Image (tube, rainbow, N blue to C red; front, side):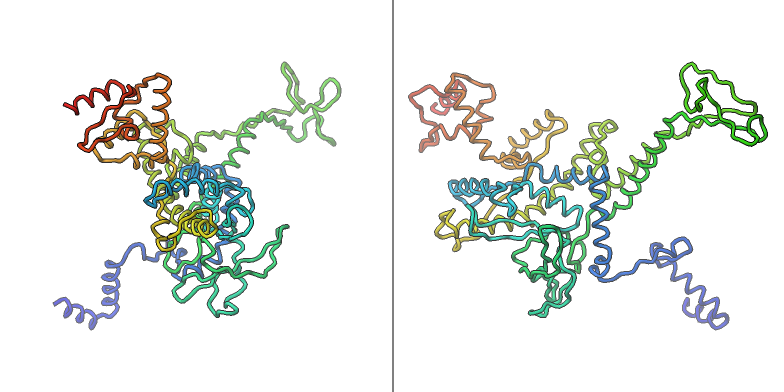
Length: 517
């Protein structure tokens, strides 16, 4: 019926039918896709990601670096992420299944992470390199790490950090392989990196424009992929660069306005034709015949006829600036997944619940970054380092390459965070551990501790206290259950055997007595 009506309308008035069809179509369209006089200047296009980004990548990178160096808000955001994600460093816990071997590997790793062993420049420890690499990834969008094998030194394996600026953009086709090179990366048909073309740079800072081809397995390319056809990174600050720069400019202008407002300026107005103004400018002078250019306490000065005084007091308050900066800071933090408190360090405006919720949301931002850094940087470095330690004889593992994956098993301990209300948080953790909802290893990992080191230290402290004849309240069977297992022999029937000495406290004797009964 409706189709027949539409055909009848079209036969009578084609224009009317066309308008009806356009109206019906507009009802089915998205408002976001409308082009009106209010948004006709906003017509972005869809194209290949790399072709779109390569024309702006360097400019965005330069602007982000400028803000890193000059904007306190940008520095607060970058520093807040690096401080919470890396902190004192992401450290490994070997999981080979052999505790003795785990200890040897972790001890050797601690030696390698010293600046003279892990850094090709011998200037940064591995923990310091983690902080710098994350910072460069946030600001520049990407950074390269080259795995270098050297024969000299205690350890044959070192790392070289390379700025993304040195990725060559001069060649389009690889000379020998014939593969496509896009923005310095040699790719296969599936956009998998095969090699990186890196420009050589002289010690005095000049690029030679004679790039070296470095195989992809020798390079760790740290960046975040947001598009399936993306091959290089873009600065994480890109969404908020404009906001940060405008806020910085606004604060600079407010500073100038405040300086002007702090000055008490006086203007002397002279009417045209008044005495002393004919033929020459009237100049007020003090008794010493010097020009009157300043105001002194207790000064009385009679003006010339026709002269009057006006003061300049700019009526500009700081209240508006405070609100404006707070809004901009809050929005910039939201763009990076950070709370206003972390961006501004302003904790006076938040309640306990709000501060705790903000911290929990921040942690949800930091934890994925920690996992990303452990998976994309620490894991590849650890595997390569372990291979070379075995091949160079630093570790004696005869069947290493037969069971390589099992020996390379590792768990990364990331820095933890402190509590807002320690009493509430500790009680909640104790309850979770006692009920089996959380293990000691999980609790230690949340705080950035090694659970084995915790138990070893607890056992050492208890033994030292007992040797000195002290009984500390913290050494109860609940808190040192794991540590005590090293000092109590277990019989076949599951009961605890009695020693000749009296090292155990009264609580332990009571428990043993009950078990014997």
